[in-house]
Image 1 (cartoon, rainbow, N blue to C red):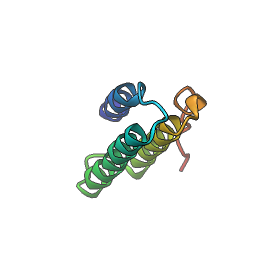
Image 2 (spheres, rainbow, N blue to C red):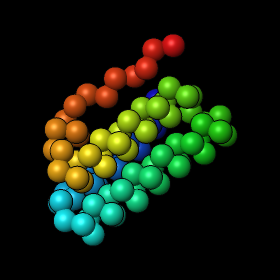
Image 3 (cartoon, one colour):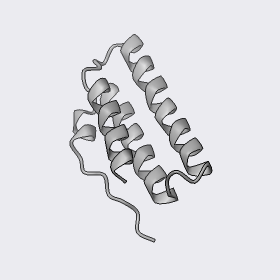
Length: 83
């Protein structure tokens, strides 16, 4: 789980400076999509659980939202789904 948090946090910090202009939004969206794809690969290979993948995907969504101007998206706590 620490790997997941570190991965998501590094991506969030890297994208935290993204402004609302179109080229930066596109970069943020591409990076968030990359996070989601990487999480899918990691889950498929058994490196992380479905729950951990869901947390990464929620973080990627928050990054995309922040790039679009929703600055509250990165400060909201991501809740882990219960099984």
